[in-house]
Image 1 (cartoon, helix red, strand yellow):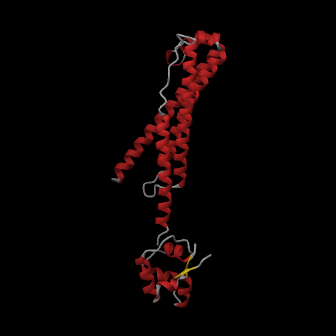
Image 2: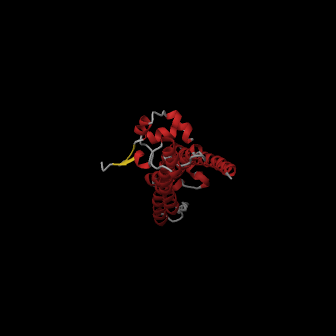
Image 3: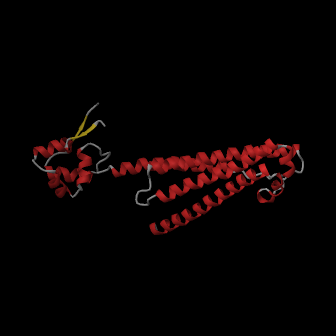
Length: 68
Length: 174
């Protein structure tokens, strides 16, 4: 898929574990894992908002468009 | 609402089992009667459902064999369709009903209904020809309105496949 999710990069920058993020954004580990591994087909604005809030970043920091 | 649907599906499952067993018995009865008449032609006087095919059996054995074969293939195909319906009803889960396996089985059901229609048309044409050639032959024409049903089930299978896609998208929405 041409949309790349850079959640792991942002988590590493903020030194936050998946468990910690899961608690902060109120998402299951399974769902966060789907997002992190790029298997997700869609993301809700509410989820994006919660992750941006928890990681103190912009949506553009999490999502990237690649032509390949 | 969900509970009501579950009950309806369970009742349909029971009906499908009854239909499956009844059709298997019907196919078995026809095949057994045929095998019996090979060795004892007099038994053809009271063939399946009381048809008297004794003279036909004696005079045109191979035509008799083809007629019985076509007549037996119909309930065999119908019973396999009933078996596929049992598979669908026993595998479907109302919490996530759209699976590719069920969609494929539904598509297969439509193909088997179509095959049943084709065999019915062949049997009816052959029986009509035989009645014309041998007036008084006690063969009955079977209703063959399966093509419409096959089309409907095929359309449902295609809609079901779209449902599978939508469900997987929904499951992968975070």
